[in-house]
Image 1 (spheres, protein in one colour):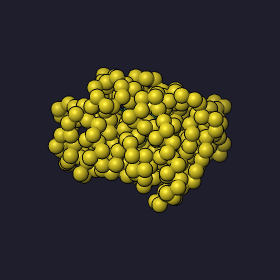
Image 2 (image 1 turned 30 degrees about the horizontal axis):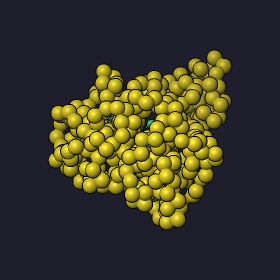
Image 3 (image 1 turned 60 degrees about the horizontal axis):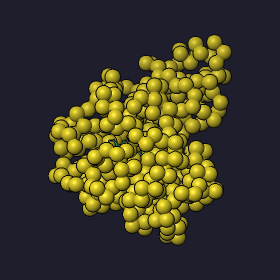
Image 4 (image 1 turned 120 degrees about the vertical axis):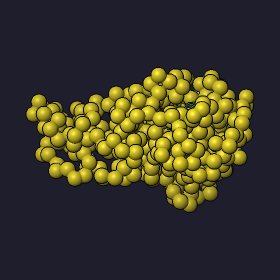
Length: 338
Ligand code: TXA
Ligand code: MG
């Protein structure tokens, strides 16, 4: 598989992407090439999921360990059903309620799904994204699209085309630039191969919402945030320190102000990820994010990218409350802090 020479960026309207741009991207996917595209969560790095060589190229571009399986994107339950051995009633109920959307379901795979997609495991993760650009690309490609987040392995997921370019320029063929992704955090991942179903990664679709459709699921506690450290191998992306900025980040138990001042007084160039309301501190690069989990999530990764770019030595993040709505945010902040 030859290395792409340069990465082309094509701007598309996020709601009504131009047919020619989508056709070009779809053609590349069908030829085994790599295309980054926006979803409603974060940007994905897509390849034809049924082409093992193309999916291997994703792992190479990202520097992703081959032990970490990738999510396959389809447009509906019918598309998902072609990839799995069985499409159980639970999957049908969840898809009816949450698809297209940011819920990923783990099910037993069919033989046609290449081993590289599932890291050699017997299960495959499937999701129908809601973003019009992602949906148009899947439809035009005519194949399911394997896509992890479009960042170098173990770095922050991109929520803007510019973030993708920063991490993967020269390593992928095309980026469909549909602007900032609305959700900002990766999808909720739910394992349906165990009873009760197990939450493998918290996301914007909360455990309570899932439980309102299918009843009790196994989920981590708010206090420890421990999902499956024991089950690490089950969803390798959930190993700690997965979503890490290149500068050290620590979570404060309070608003972070006193820790920021302490580091500032010790001579550090500190970045502060605060929650509204917060008074800025002279000499500290501060991002005040909204005190509302949905808006906060949409802006979290962009704020981390900007703090990195500002050249701070370390980042102090205020830890949001232990409530269901902030569950995914706390998970990502904890993992970023490692
Ligand atoms: O929102 C999202 O999910 C984004 C967009 C692009 O769809 N994708 C994404 O992919 O975040 P990635 O590869 O960065 O994270 C996928 C997560 C990882 O934690 C991976 O280990 C887990 O899903 N996963 C994938 N296949 C799995 C499987 N068969 N069993 C268990 N976990 C799986
Ligand atoms: Mg990722």
